[in-house]
Amino acid sequence: VSRRPKTEDPVFSRLEQERIASQLSRQELADKVGVHYQTVGYLERGEYSPSLALTLKIAAVLDLRVEDLFSLRPFEGAPSERTTS
Amino acid sequence: VKLREHWDELGRVYDESNRRWGDTLMRDRTYDRLRTPPARRTLVAVVAAFVLLKVSVRSLADVPEDCLDERQLALRYRVYHEAYRWIGLVAVLAGGTGVIAFIALGKDPSGDTLAVTWNQLMAFFYVHDRARDRATVDDPRPAGRRTSLSNSRRCRSRHARRTTRAGSRRRRSATDP
Image (cartoon, rainbow over all chains, first blue to last red; front, side, top):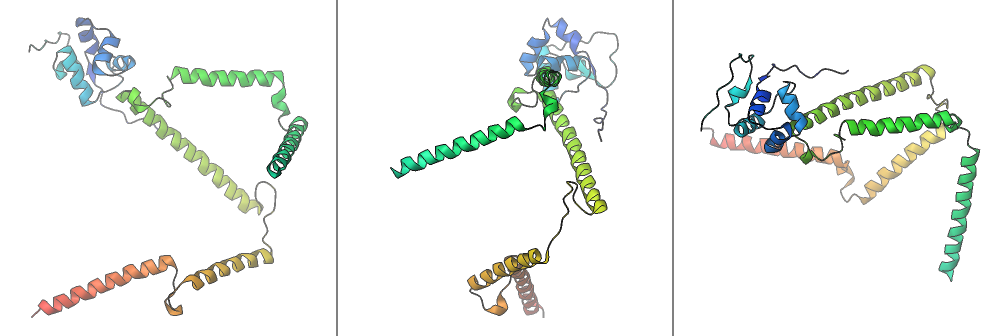
């Protein structure tokens, strides 16, 4: 009876690198975007695909574009550029 | 004074039923397997495991929605969905087994044969007829117009449809050259 949840397209994330670059802990980032700190861990490991609202919130907190943080293709080795506002 | 007597009587009845209940419980041998030290230890372990399991999932099922984020909510809904599927499967299997056992054995699984006597059957029709008679007595409409509620509703809607159709037909014929 049990069926696995529908497999989703893998979403690659640079969240961990960018969070560390911003000198934020998981808990701090989680508090800023209003999720549980474990959810940040899931996002960093690519085990959970966030909603659009959450993606935009994270991007706003880290002052980055969404495509700098998440991608459907693996990120290349070059570090992402920071957006300047 | 009467109230006092009734109160005392009530107290006596309560004490008596309580004593009888205690007596029955003390004589009961149904769950003797659970009344041994190993069984008690197992039960404590099961309860402890249940509590620890709840702790390990942060009581995700009991926490209000406002306290959960989108991932936790999605997880909770998925688990609920899966649980309902399992419960449904178990219910269908249990019901199906019961029905098959009932058909195959010709009696219910508890071992008691099901039988309806002629008098019981007649009693059913008697009650049914009495209920219909009572409804007919209360019904102010003439005998030919009496129908059950659902029937009359159905008729009313059919009548309404018919009159609407007739009206539109009349209107159409009036406008047609």
